[in-house]
Amino acid sequence: MATKTLLTIEEFLRLPESVGERDVRYELLEGELVELRPEMLLHNLVRDEVLFGLMDFVKSVGLGTVIGLQWFHLFGTTVRRVDVAFLKSGRDLPLDKLPEGAPDLAVEVVSPNDTASEIEQRISDYFGAGCQRVWVFHPEHQEVYIHGLAGVSRRRGEELLEDSELLPGFSVRVSSLFEQG
Image (cartoon, rainbow, N blue to C red; front, side, top):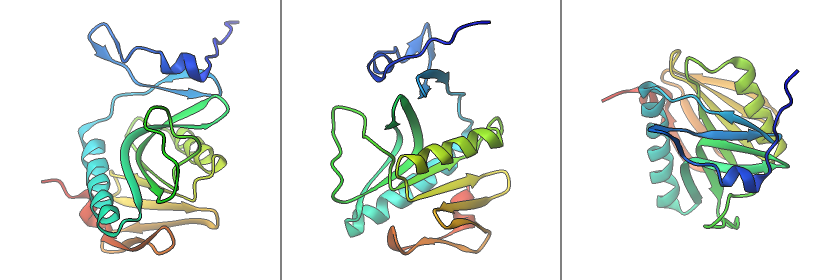
């Protein structure tokens, strides 16, 4: 039986970003190093649509910070890379180290090679670190699941994606987030 090698946060931060000619991205889950699979074009197009839409809105009304592909030190020796993160104004965001805890809103875009259990674990980790909401985008079905402390709801098609508590005034038609080109 093989023994797992566990890393500290400091060791994780010293890992190289490439192996040979290949870029490598990892997460740290309870000290265990997990390599992230490459994202496909559809994943990136949807992520960027959400990222730029949220970024434009949040910046225009001064609600906080929106960032894409950011690692967060959630708790213990767990570090996750969030597709899109929103952090409310007033949070102390260090520029030279990983943000501590979860973003207020975490956005995940599901890729075909993501398993349901992997997505559920991500959601659980975010909430365990203080996240208030997680939006999970499913490009193949063009729908969004909104996870909150009170439960889960689904939006699709012409329905509006809104969050009056975290993002007052933000409203976008779900189908527009899945349009390419």
